[in-house]
Image (cartoon, rainbow, N blue to C red; front, top):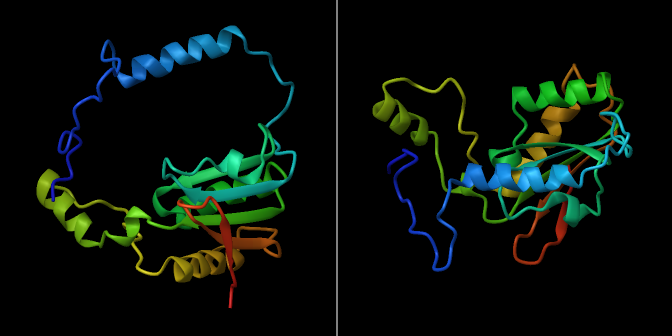
Length: 183
């Protein structure tokens, strides 16, 4: 398995704009956005006082799926939506400095971490000559990983508010959330 970014590059789809990089297109889109932008006059404190931790998977449109508007929540995303030290760091800042009280954890069906193992780190070490300092955090059972994530949040000494922590699995085929019992 190659882990380099150039491996597996797909040809552009027919009719796709190939005149610039993806980043160039994003910057152009931002210029169009900024031209019509009006300062919403809000600060960094989320209106609903909730932080959502979710997978970075591009199929998850969290704001649409949860009926959220700009400013409603803090969104923390990473591969798998797993609760790492950095997620605890972000949640701690979210709670202690910016007033959130509730935490929602969202994993999803068909997650790429279900097909990886810690062997991925070994392959990276062989390829680049340095072992990553981070864990892959792969899992086989998405429900159990949500339970584990809830437990990590509930037992963190840094978090003030751990009484409203709920975990879910988002079904990428139906768009529905399925709540996971912590027990």
